[in-house]
Amino acid sequence: MDTKELGNQSDKSLSCSSTEVVYELSPYDQEQFSTVLHDIEPAGWTPLAASIAATYEDLQAAEGMENIIYIVSDGVETCDGDPAEEAKKLNSSNIKAVVNIIGFDVDNAGQNELMAVAEAGKGKYMTVTSQQELEEFFTSEQRELEKEWLQWQAENVSNYYKTELEKRKQVHAIKNAIYEKANEEMEKLLALTDFMQTELDLDADSKRKIDKAIRNRNNDIRTYAREKENQYIREIQEQARESREDVRKKGEEEREKMNED
Image (cartoon, rainbow, N blue to C red; front, side, top):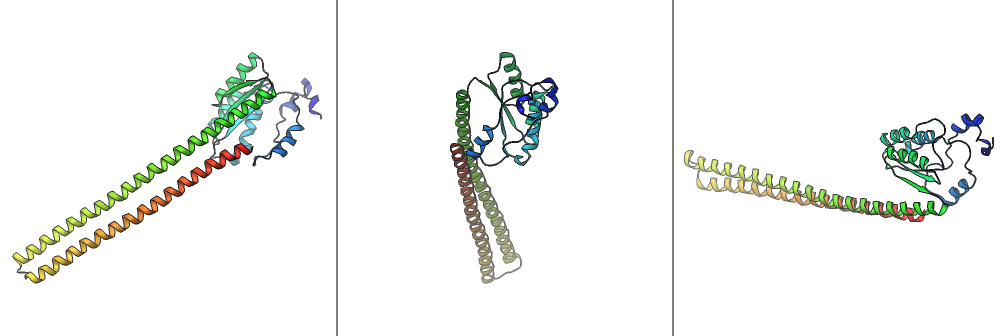
């Protein structure tokens, strides 16, 4: 049936169940996307709630990511659904989608209803009256996303610096604890040789040899702890550097991707 005919009451059931994915979740291809949009004409009823509900299945592959949804509508729900409830469910689901609503030339009553949907989806509402305003809105949104990626990049780079510092402090504290235990052991062993000399008649030459072995053991332990500290700090520095580079690269890639779009 031609979509232009889907405005009559008799066609409500068919129109209200007509939600369709016309562009699969994939990297943006401007030519393909424009071709798809060219063949779409607004007509029929407005299954806003059903469309929001269907989005949940469409975005399952994007679970664990930050999902932002933009719904462009020239009217309010006309299929007896509850779009605000569906937006709330979507936002609180495992895909945690933010639902933004763009009202295209909608009257005041319609704007109030669409605002409630955006609020339920923890998103925002914007009204536009022309294609130019719609394009300006998305340009503004792109700039905001670029700023958010810059902020995300800066915050994560800073967090990796902080994490690196904390780990280095922990390794240094462990080394100092080993030093302390090694010194305690050495002092006790040297005290034992003193006891052996005074109480058990340990000769001076033997005592010197034992004391030397005790001090050598202490030096070996301290050297081992120091070398391990240096090794772990180098590993921590390298891991932190790689993580910061990954964050910077991710932020740059996402901003470049938006500019290409």
